[in-house]
Image (cartoon, rainbow, N blue to C red; front, side, top):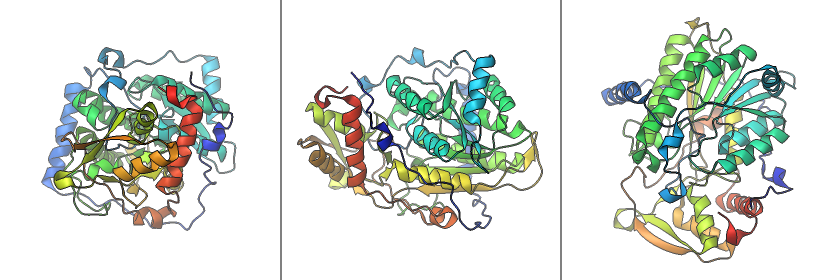
Length: 448
C-alpha cells in the first residue's frame, strides 16, 4: 500500500525567492543556417499533418531522459487507452478554483500556467512558485505512460499547497482558450510532453502529437492572447544527439538527433524560433540534463534500479563499444527548479498582442545540468551503499535505440544570465531520493 510520508515537505525543493540580479544583456539565439536543420524542421512539421488527427496518445508530463527505460511490461501497452480525452470542465465552482489557484499573493508576483504540473519537474516547480507568492494553475491529463497513482499523489501534494490542477490536454484548444479568458497569465511554464527515448520505437506518433502538435496548439493560444505571456518551456539535452564535442554548449550543432524524442524537441526549438519571429512571443527553452530526485519518474534508470535492487532483480548496465563507459550529467531536481525560476524571472515580456508582433522579442535556450558526468556503474555503486544491498549487475552492450554514450553540460550561459549554479552532488541527491522512495512505498521489500 502506497503511503504519503508525514514529512513529505522535507522532500520538496526549498527554492529561494525571486532572483534579484543585474539585468542581463539582450541575447538572441544564434540562427541555424544548416540545410540539414531546415530539412529536419520541415520533415517533422510535415509529420504533424500525418499524425495529428489519428494519433492515439496524449500530452505527457515531461522530464529529462535517462540512458535506460523500464521494461515494456511495467508500462501500459494498451495504446487504445491513450486517446486524447479531456475531463469535464467548466461551471462556476470550477472557475472559482481556477481563479483562486492563479491568484497572485506577493507584490510583483507572476500568474503562471504550468503544463505537466502533475509530472516530476512540474510538481516541484509549481510548489516553488506557489511558495514565493506567485499565482499557479496546473494543467495535466494524468495519462498512463507510467503509474497514474504517482501523479495523483503529486496532485494531492499540490492541492495541500493551494494549487489546482485542471485535468485536460494541451491539444484541447477550447480548454486553453477558456483558461486564458479567465486568467491573464503573465507566464507559461510549459513542461508537458511525451518523455522517454525508447518508447518512441513503440509509439512514435505520440511524440509528434504531444511534443510538436501540442506545443503548436499552446503557442497558437498564447500568440492570440491580448496579453501575450512569456513562455519558458522544456527542451532536452537529447537535442545534442550524436555530437561528440564536450561539454555540450548551446552553440554546438544539434542537427544529428539520435532518437525521435530528440528530433521532436529539436523541432520544438525551431517552432519556438518561428513563433518568436512572426508573433513576438518571448520564448526560453531549457535543455534539461538527466533530472533525478524525490517524486521522480518510474521509467528513469535511478528509479527502477532502486526498485529492482530492493527486489533482488538484475539491473542492466550498458557499456559502449570496446567496453566504453556510459555516463550521464545527473542533475538534482532542486537545481533544475532554481534554473527554471531563474529563466522565468529573467524572461522579457512578449511584444505582440492579439496575434500581431509589435517589436522584436526575446528568444533564448539554456543548458541546465550539473557539469559533472558520472558513469552509470558509479550510480549503481552509490545505490548499493545507500540500500545496503548488492546489485545483480547485468552488463550489456548499449543498444541502438536512441541512447547516447554520454552527456555533459556547459552551463556558463545560464550562470551568466541568471546565476545558475548547481549545488547537489549525486551522492547527496540519491540519498534524498532513497529516503523518499522508502517513505512513499512503505515496505521496501514489497514496493511496486
